[in-house]
Image 1 (tube, each protein chain N blue to C red):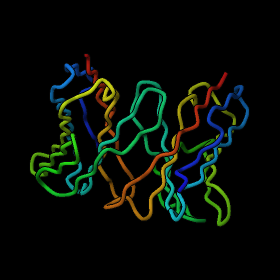
Image 2: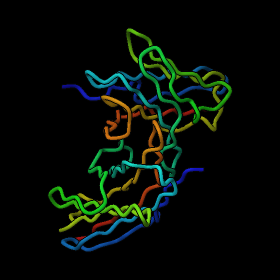
Image 3: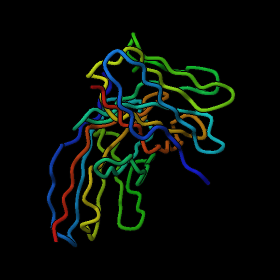
Image 4: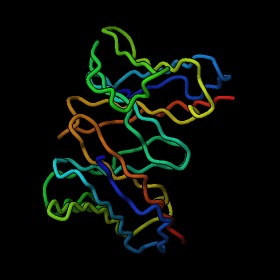
Length: 115
Length: 109
């Protein structure tokens, strides 16, 4: 039973380029969460999605960041015109149902480095 | 601003001792609490979750919850060097988890 998968594991971009991060949830999970972890800091919630719907994007920066979870295929976190401050580890988690009373399982993360 | 607070450490304990990790949270509406372990450069790995006041034991780990004091703790008995990692406490907030910054645990032989 495959866990949460993320790709790429490492991504290097130059300032101004686009970064596209992918997340495939655990089999049977329809709830996906994206978190960002800056060096030496905790995990910060970014966005919560269910299939074809954004449920909560309160942690998402208002500009340059977007997320989707289409009916078919992985969830995508897109960062346009990346800046050095976007360098971080981006983790995706999935759960069977909403987070209260239900565990989130994390993927291996994508380490984004902006040069 | 809903917050989860942890002492960043490092907490150093000798092998075989009990390590005690603590966490406080600000949102009285939080119902579920989670402890994750994160090795350097790796993703968080769930250790335990707790919903009810009191203690919950799983092997060498015991989670404790006191909702009146808004306090969660994790005890690790018979600590091993392989337990050396950062331990993240998280509380649910409506539809997401709020994480503390983590406590770094060092277990020395």
